[in-house]
Length: 595
Ligand SMILES: *[C@@H]1O[C@H](CO)[C@@H](O)[C@H](O)[C@H]1NC(C)=O
Ligand SMILES: *[C@@H]1O[C@H](CO)[C@@H](O)[C@H](O)[C@H]1NC(C)=O
Ligand SMILES: *[C@@H]1O[C@H](CO)[C@@H](O)[C@H](O)[C@H]1NC(C)=O
Ligand SMILES: *[C@@H]1O[C@H](CO)[C@@H](O)[C@H](O)[C@H]1NC(C)=O
Ligand SMILES: *[C@@H]1O[C@H](CO)[C@@H](O)[C@H](O)[C@H]1NC(C)=O
Ligand SMILES: *[C@@H]1O[C@H](CO)[C@@H](O)[C@H](O)[C@H]1NC(C)=O
Ligand SMILES: *[C@@H]1O[C@H](CO)[C@@H](O)[C@H](O)[C@H]1NC(C)=O
Image (cartoon, rainbow, N blue to C red; front, side):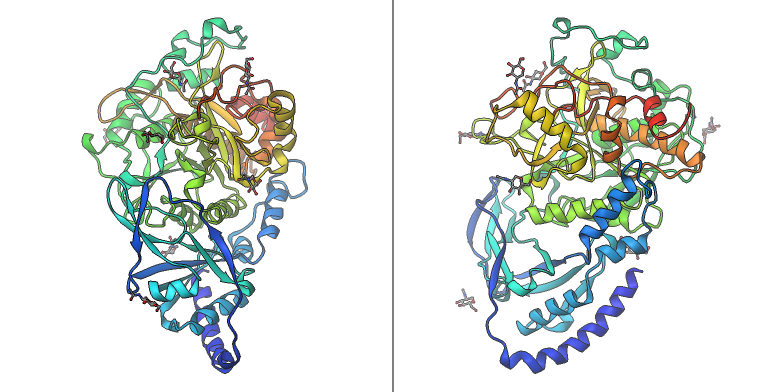
């Protein structure tokens, strides 16, 4: 299916070339419209001068999907409980027909490029099916300046002094606006060196005991139906989570059910650490339980104590070690941000290209939403939409810096709260962090807030507007975007989580733990659904919000940042713990499985 577009493109281009030659003489200068604009240089870069005319740029023109809103409607029809189409996910061909570019878009854009002196052989059509098509061109700065009506400059990364050639804005012909989604990379900065990228593994400070963030003694005790070991308040293990969230220990049975765990920034999952983890924390499990590995863009998974990545180990230990018996795949992306999107574009393209992608994906990485251009954020989010429409659930940690976002900003200069990406994308489920048992409270690092790019989806409108009207009022007006998609959606334990890493047994904190914990629960629900001949849960959010009563509401704690105490956990949805923490039995029941 990926190949057929290539053939189509070849014949179109030939056809078009003749048209262009005939028309060139009568062409007047096109009206250019600014497509994307960046107000200031990202803080970690400085401008070093005008880019050399001869420098060759590798640019990709993202083509608008044929029918984005058609796919969005089909997705909501398939994911909204109660509807006639509920659970009837789309097949790849259907998704591709919505997401791929129309032949007229391809021909109009290539005509424009050819008119501007770019030879046909230098235009490469990259069919990405369900994640959106691209036209790739390699052009010298002198040509790109004219083509996009801009001036490319060289920018140096302050710390590494690596350079990037970028522009602060770019334009495209008005008549092509309907066909072009973005041109990349121009206004999104980003380098290939993992140390310099803004992407964060959402578990930091491992080994650094953090204590509890709320004075639990001062809080009202909250009744729990079941007894839980008090040590779980300070040492979270799989047994604690099984008791707290009623996660079954019995192995899953369905071999077609899969859990996918992407790894970025040279975070490598270790088999020896997993063995030690299972030996200590899951003595009831098959001691040889392991994970498979898939790689993309030169990714790998080398083994050895010095190769251990605490993020990858956490993610694998709390999936293999919690989603008992669910086949789990570590998906290692090599080049951190060769895609200029911290690897996120590469990872979603890779997974979307699979005939049978994992039904549940847990990804504990994120970055500041403002770090990439709004159009690039939309591009990746649309790719998530396409993937979820096939019945895949995407789960991400919400971020670890409270209202400051993915990573702490400069608190002294912070002028507004920062959303995390992809927390603001409506098609993923964002998981905030909690800690403690009696009561379970919000972790103070749990990120949450409001997107500046994505508007609020209908599934959460009532919950969020109720929070804004009844709890927040005018507080923080101007610091956050009242109309934005709000996150997180739900929450799970995120502090004092016990892992094995490079042979050591540290305690970690971060919403990186919350994501895999919840993803494991969804994978186990899917196991039962598949066993019963039912479709998997797929795009989760409409299901979660229409079953808000099944969550354990978290009402204590706040998430400071930006020189403020942040938002409060409250009764009902809040931008720190979402709807609350999960209960497996209630999830299963809501999904239609009688226990
Ligand atoms: C770069 O190209 C532009 C237009 O082609 C020209 O005006 C300018 O002088 C060139 N700059 C240098 C440094 O050669
Ligand atoms: C969060 O709680 C920890 C542990 O009590 C504390 O060290 C840290 O300063 C708190 N963070 C903020 C931003 O208040
Ligand atoms: C685990 O693997 C080892 C070595 O491959 C084997 O000897 C052992 O029997 C296996 N254990 C179980 C419980 O399957
Ligand atoms: C998609 O899958 C095909 C066939 O397995 C492969 O040749 C191609 O490289 C893949 N593309 C991506 C983007 O992974
Ligand atoms: C934060 O901003 C202040 C004021 O601009 C500056 O003096 C300080 O060095 C910055 N701190 C960091 C860690 O960048
Ligand atoms: C607020 O969010 C909306 C999307 O809901 C967006 O269009 C708007 O630009 C955002 N405002 C700011 C100031 O970023
Ligand atoms: C959070 O709760 C405290 C204590 O009730 C209150 O003083 C504060 O105004 C609340 N803040 C927000 C942002 O809701």
